[in-house]
Length: 256
Length: 212
Image (cartoon, rainbow over all chains, first blue to last red; front, side, top):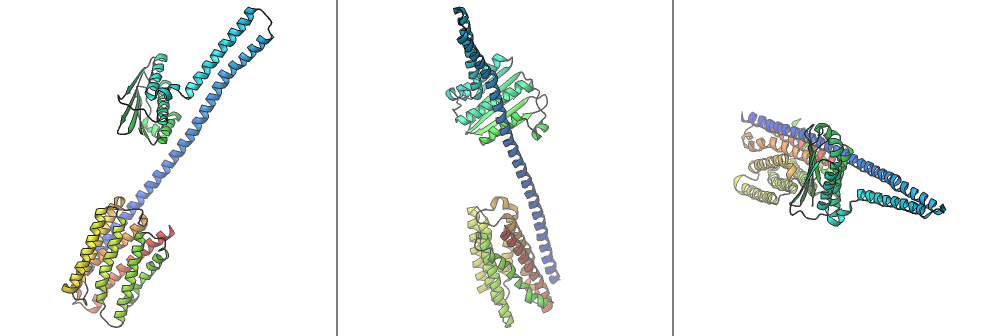
């Protein structure tokens, strides 16, 4: 009796252990599979972000080239033509004065265009006066040129940040406001900037048409990918919250 | 048939021992511990077999081997853990077990009889360690001194099956003393089967480690 008890006990314990081992190994295999899938998705996402960065850079270069050609190039060609006429004309003083005035006006326009193109490339106030002032300028220019309500809330003791972080946040704000104006058909925009426990938080919200959250998680537009790229480059995190007719919210968190 | 199995079965230990030897040079700490465990198993098999061949009682080998086995395997599981507290705890358990085995040897059970008390206790602790590995592996395992995770899982699975099956036999051995030799050997052949299964798991695990 005891003998059979020992034999059955041995076999039962060994089988039980075998069962536990089998299910554990199966569970580990599933976890490993999921981890591999996650790594694969992360790699694909990183590649997509890299492609986006290249695409955006090329697009920006094309835009600058176009601006330079259309604005500066055209003005300088006209000035050259005027100066040529000026050299050839042996006319009255009033004609010469007229040509000089026209050239001066074109030069002023050229200088203005250069200033605008340069400001678009890098806002001058950012280095001198910091992110908060530059964002306030951005909001002011939006209020002046549109009928939107643009609000900026900044924490009272918000500190000056590293230049690369300030530029990234400014570009993100630019991108979000541009998106809001062009696509969202919103009337109100709200931006908030806070700094707590070495974490910079930038929140953007609008009351526009919103986006389908499901399709957003599958495929983002160039602008949102650009925002993601900039955030990831600073080891930060960005979250987009949106739904059809429920507006759009972007939360950017960057370690500072 | 059983006699043949008893003569040949234990020597399966050579296979994982040779594989462990092949990878010893660049091995991690836990790998080297497994190697020394296999060395201890082989040496004790040789001594026990020699004594048996000379019709001498080979039970004393078991008393010493159990202490070595517990020490080495306890140290193996200790090498997998990051927590200082649990590392110290295992040292205390190994020390306590060694003392208990010596007390058993001198005062409780004769050196010439099977050391069922320490052997059962060894099985119990190994089952506990193996279970803790399964449950807590994601948080406890260090990557610096240990084998890779899949190798550890296979080796740990082998220990769990072997010690689970052997626990009942070791605890109930003295009830078998009154049985006939044939029955006694049949039951112990089950232990030998589990032991060979353990060596197969060790072979597979150590081979995977060699490949990677």
